[in-house]
Image 1 (cartoon, rainbow, N blue to C red):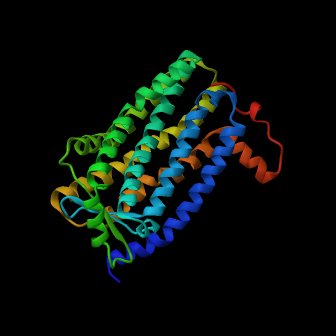
Image 2 (cartoon, rainbow, N blue to C red; image 1 turned 45 degrees about the horizontal axis):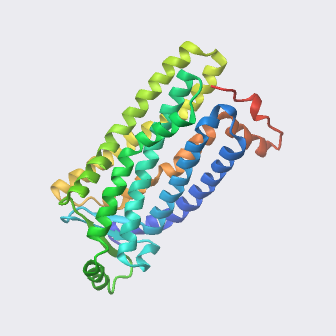
Image 3 (tube, one colour; image 1 turned 90 degrees about the horizontal axis):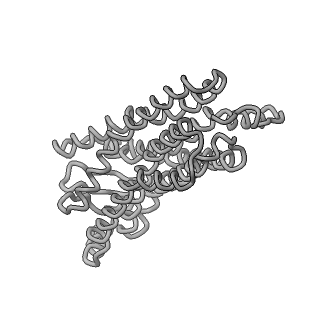
Length: 316
């Protein structure tokens, strides 16, 4: 058994466990957000719901498609080892763009959550108009990326000659199919590459900037008891902001290295989309643990004791 077979074997076990675990935890978090959110989280509850739904889509696409990026070839070749291989190649290519969009949106959601928490503490009250405008402004890069990816789908995947090319190319393949290539020749492709690449290096520091601003206001404006509550919530967000630095930045740097040098690193090829999807499992666990009412609700279920959320988490 060669190294590639070992990765496929391990991932064939990992993907089902990852999918079931993620969907279970995300559904639990959605239930807690909808039915057990304290007043202090009401203003950002829709953002938390949006993040959870986006991450469910991210996990589903990742496990359904199971991508591998062949960076030793120019342009980069995409393969699908998941159930998606039983569908036409252009379907899997479209889903790859969906995976990129949901991964990007999930990272942006952390920044938005930090920003709104900062504005809530600074202004005490946020109007619906202000929240919608801010949400739209933060998502401008996401919308540009979506437009670029839409162009890439119509240009690189949906033309009839390309569809027929991959139908012929994938005849006889059983373990995987080739679904397309990643080109940087067109302006939309280059723009999307810059946006996605930039987000990997820009979003974590931006999240930490808002985190520091929040801590300054917490320490100067609110009581010590409320400081402890807010700091616990921010601790979870801080971990969510730091994790991309630990995982995304090294792996994406390795991805760029492999593209430039054409060196084959199987870890990068198989794990690129896996690691970018891990927040779908990690983030809800952090939210449940660090948001006090959610954690206490789970504890009350385990201990079978009544729980009063309103006494645990007050307005922050």
